[in-house]
Image (cartoon, rainbow, N blue to C red):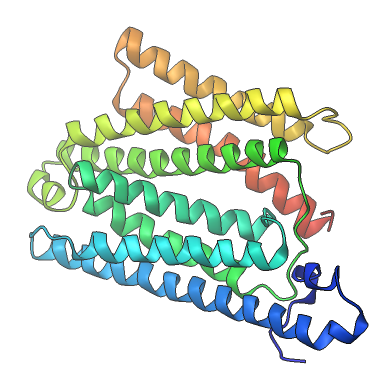
Length: 297
C-alpha cells in the first residue's frame, strides 16, 4: 500500500463495491490524497513567495501587481486542494488542522481583497507567511481524521464561525499595525514608519471595517448556533458559546464606543485584542483540548 494512502478519508468508494474493488479504491484514495497534498504544499510555498515579493516592493518603495497575483494563485490552489480533499473524503473536514488551514486561507484572501481597494503590502507581509504555515499541518497530517457528515445547517454555522474568526484575526493584525504606527510617530520615527506601514488614518479605517465585518459574521454565527444546535451540553459547546458571546459583547462595546464617543488608538487596540483572545479560546482553544488532548472527535 502506498505510504500516503488515507483509507480513513476515502471510505465512500467502497460503499457501492465489494472487497474485490479494494485495490481500485485504494488507488482512487491515494490519487485524491497526493493531489490535495501537492496543491496545498505548493500553495504554502507560493504564500512565502508572495511575502518575499511584498517585502521587495516595500524595500524598493514601488507598487506592483506581482505579489497580489502570486497571492491569488496561492489562495486558489489552497482552496482547490481543500476542495479536492473534501471530495475524496466525501465530506468537508473541519477538524483542528483543517480549520487552521481554512482560517489561514481566508485571512490571505481578505488581505488580497483589501489590496484591490488600497495599498496593503504591509498586511500581506504579515498574513501571507501565517497562511503558508497554517496550510502545512493539514496537508501533511497522517493518518487523517475522518470527516464527520454534518447537516447543512451545522455546516453553515461552522463556516460562519471560520469566517468570523478569520476576519477578527486580520483585524487583530491591523490593530497591532496601528499600535506600531502610533508608537513610532510618538517616538518621532515617522519616516521609517511611513515607509513600511500605511498612513495612520488608513490603518484605523481598515481596522474598523474589519471589526464591523467580524461583528456581523459573529452575530450570524451565534444566531445560527442558537437556531440549529439543539443540545449545547451534549455537544460540549457551552464553553465555546459563553466565550464567543463575551467576544461578541466586547466587539459590540468597541463599535458602539467608536460610533458614540469616537474611541480610537490604544483603547481600540486593547479591546480588539481582548475580543480576539476570547474568540481564540472559544474556537481553537476548545478544539485543541477536545480533539488533540482528549481525543474526542
